Length: 212
Image (cartoon, rainbow, N blue to C red; front, side, top):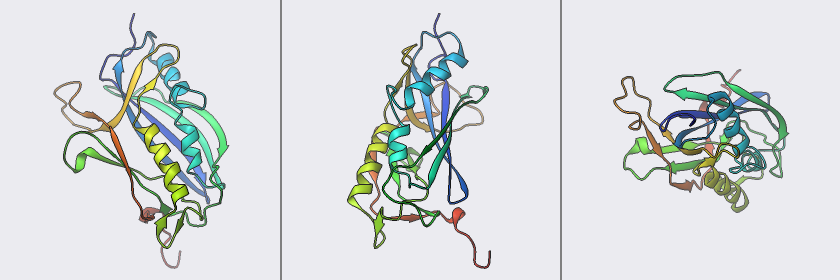
């Protein structure tokens, strides 16, 4: 028997801690080729193996390559989120960031823009690895070394994951949430290209206000 139907959506969350703040980076995936595993829990576990170090699509290692040395990846989480939400599966990590410096400002970040083949602002997704290392930028511009690790992460995030056991294929993309979806496929678009922005950016929700 086959696994989850084509069009089902699952979500990857990389949760960590840096400078005393909690962070989360989220990416969505859609079933593009059915797994041979006829159990959603086991299939989700297979997906998490695929995106972990040594997997068929290692996202964790290039993610940690963009992180400062004072960052800790606390957990790797996966969850089926559409057409229904199921139990979250968690892998406890504790792995540190490996870029060659610590972060001194929790509200600065580089930006990876992932795009689909369609036009429109809704077809562009921003990935913002938190707390850029202090040596990742100079004069407001991202260094060549940091741009390179962001590009590697961007390439991983726009690739398909393949379950090592069930051989299910999961396309990375943008999930357009709809209250009344008409078909199984209209609310998800796979990402195909990635652009690294040249400037360092400020994440205002992580900016501590004056006097606080």
